[in-house]
Length: 197
Length: 247
Image (tube, rainbow over all chains, first blue to last red; front, side):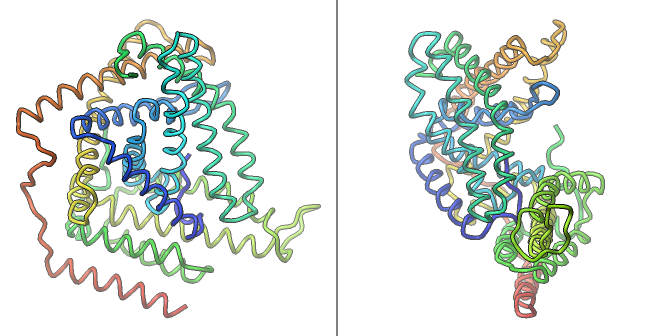
């Protein structure tokens, strides 16, 4: 889910950069010095997790887990996702450096929304905690797809049929993201509950 | 994990001051993003190709990255000429291929490749740590750089742990399928990675405190901007203006 270089209009690129910069500044402000290593190494884990390919019918998809990222990191998801995307752009040319604002915002804003909507729900019983993980995982992915689609359509109206197909494609993936995020929350609750408090 | 393929090299570009390369890249990409039509993006593509010729990255890696990045452009080519409103260039049954649509797709393709090749030649030719160090000089918040430093440092460590868990799961005869058991297994893998990372981070912070961490890392080596760096900066910026004037 990364828009590549050269496609979006300057106006959209600027809007994405400004919004992301705001989120990053807020995220850094909320990050205490003693929590820097936690945020950093958890981001390394999310980076590695995004290399995992999960089978989905005849195809496969790679994990995004931005909802889970938000539940664990809150506003710090902004700087963490920005760094991850910057690294992918520089090392693998996934996404791009000019589009980093738009891409970070589309992934990190849903993460922060998941944090506010579902974090407290993970403290409840097992079923509700799974539900919280499921909803965070699937909705965050769909919201990200929606933001990416919006950026494309705002750039050029003729992208609409392409964006429609893209968002439709993300529905089955969002179910996988949801189920996996739900199980991860259950696992963390059982083994390391202080990560969720 | 072999991460910094393009940073391994001995060209002039590899040895330039990363601060200068970042500034040139930022100016280059702003000009390129703002460039209208086909001619100007083509000029910028020539500029990045010239840099590529100097940097001489590993051909196989370069081609595979470029092909990957052009996958999305390929999809644009399928959709845009058909859905873009404009003068008909070609009629295929009930579908119209518009002239403006093709021009738009060409423009996107040129810009996209110009910036991607520019990224490889200017940014990827420096190691990630040197880029982070340069960012510090360019007034990026210190906290973000420390976050990056630890994040990047521990990717390979966490990846080793991932491989260990994966090996253990495969030894127990795990075959991934589209079912709940598979998804639960992947979730426990991710959960395991997250917990290991969380616990490791606690140890890291203690070790940092033992070494007197107070919010920043001391820097041991320093950049020095030489004549070559200044010349490269000047020539590049002049080239961009010349391109802009010409079209």
